[in-house]
Image 1: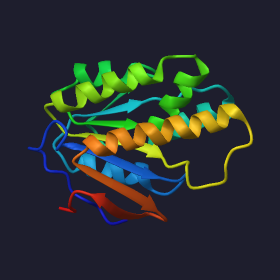
Image 2: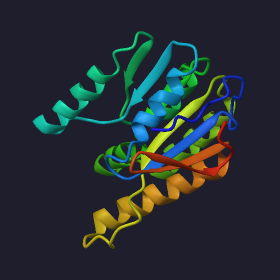
Image 3: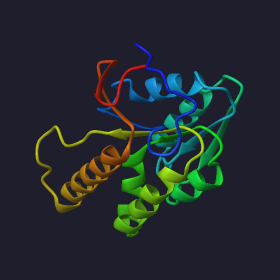
Image 4: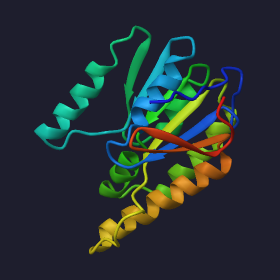
Length: 184
């Protein structure tokens, strides 16, 4: 995979990168490569929750794949704005926004309020931030109301972050396409 670069001196919204793509597109690998090109330590903000054994196995696989020294994993399914603020001085990778939206929907949390807090904290960050999300709006219209709401909430969230981010990248088949900003 081609590796894009992050400028370690860019902070706030200019140092914010949104990476979108489908399942198994290579987006998380790209995000990790971009972040580890910066000096450590790095924060991996994991939003996934294990509702079953298969998801627990996926989470363990993700943890095991980050073997390079310098990673610190913070598991937070809801208050990602708090984590970004707490670790404002360290590079953070948020993986992933769509699992965060899922968590919020399933626990009947206020997505609009949480998104607002997230968008408020990004400009205050003193280190680069990479946010990863699944682009789920490219397929068919879901047949049930919850799935349609999920698709809509994720799409609105991605649009709002993309408007604010300094760089937006779409990944397909392991190949990054820069949608906003420049490839360094």
